[in-house]
Every structure is written in C-alpha cells, then in structure tokens.
Length: 315
Image (cartoon, rainbow, N blue to C red):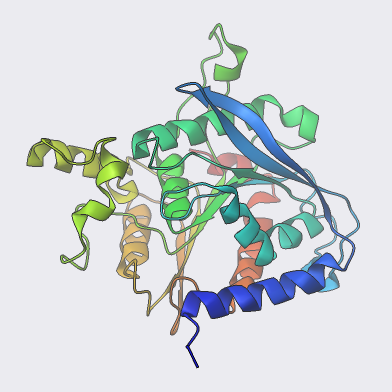
C-alpha cells in the first residue's frame, strides 16, 4: 500500500476535526474577499471573521475577555497567498478558537511571490493594517489592541511588519494613509527570520529568489542580494524595543531551523522587548497537534492584549 505523506496525514486529521466543527454552531460570520487595497491593478483581499457570541466549543471560550480585540492573520504559505491557506487554517480551528473568545480575525492575503516581491507583500500588509484601523469603529475593535499572527511565510511577514511599524500621517490627503501600522503583539509559528545567517547553508537560494526580486536573482550582484536579504530579515530590522512576541517552533522542523525563532527572540530581548519561545519536541512543519498550540497562543493574546497596558506595547 502506498504510504501517505506527512502532510497528507496531517490534512486528513485536520479536516476530520473540521468536519465535526462544521456540524456545530459556528462562533463567527465569515465575509470573504473584502478588498482592502490595490497594487499593480490587482485587488488585495482579506476575509473577516466576526464573532457571533455563540461559541460552539466551551473549551475555547474565555468569557468576554476578547471582546473588542482583533488579530490579523497573515495568510501566506511558501510566500503564496491563495484561498487554500485560509481553508487550511480554518481546519486547524484557528478562527473558531479566537472568535469563540470574542476576537475579530482579519485573514489578510498579502499576495504571492509569482506577482509581488517580499517588500511589496510587506507594504500590502501595512495597507491592510491601516485599512483595519481606519475602519476600527465599524468592527467595534480597539485600534490600539490589535495583534498579528501567522505561520511559516505568514509568520515571517508578521514579524517583519511588527518590527518595521510606521507612524501615521494625519495630514495625508488619502484618509486611508493616516493611521499608523503599529501592533500590540505578535504570535507566530516556525518563521524564517534571518536570510543572512541560515543554519543550513545548503538550502537552495532559488527558493527565495523571487521573494527578493520579481525576475529572480538574474544579474543582481551579491551586494544587492545581501541588501535585500537584510531588508527582508526581521531579525536584522529590529531597531529598538518592540511589542511582545511569542514564537512556536518544532525542533524537528525540516524546512525552517528552530534556531531562527530562538535567535530573533534573543535579539528582541536585547532591545528590551519581551519574547517567549515554545519549542515543540519532535514538531515538524507543522505538527499534528498544532491546535493545542493555537489555544496557547490565544491564551497569550488574552493576557497581552486584554489589558490597558496593551496600548503601551505598540512600537
């Protein structure tokens, strides 16, 4: 009998859970393909999961602690951003867990490397942050208590957006450009954080070539490549104290070495920030029981965002 791949087994398990969940009362209303911006003539899309207050799984509920809070989920895998990423994370019960606690979740699709560079994806995420803050009253959320989360490529872009936050421009002619892009907390799973020092030097550079430049490395010099690698490495962009971070990483991850999470946490602490790392023993990319860690992440956001001190976390 042909063996199932690790990913195949994982998906079967995840979708089995999702089948059970789908038979229950959902804790959210999902609005799909909301346009939050435009780049190169392409609409930039997000799904919005609004809590209904019904809460289907008691284990996921935390009273009303999360009401008025929001978290941005950067929906990107392998630096591709098709709808399957949202579907996959829904199968992990990510949106169920957060919405049952009262969070509004914005599943932002930053675009794919087939069309956008990493720099452009980062700009797209910041456009989404400004859109969400501009419309905060429409969603009954506090613009000063917004967290961000993602896994793998989505985790990388979440980290990068957090450490490169920008001030707002209250005098901008376009009101959508007036809000800042500051976030109150960042929670991520197995993110690449440093393209300059990668633990496995044999990793083919072609995997990230289009992330750096639209046409790949082509005739770009080593200095140009290093400059872009620095710009796209969250660890290299830390300039001062950042909001609190939590990072989850498996010590058997075959794609992103777990040291990538450890080293950025050390760099964040060195600048006076808070950074917690949870290493999953035997965890790969991802692991079968990741829903347990998503619940830990939700607990952490409860503690980090649901207090007035959250406003002081924004960098």
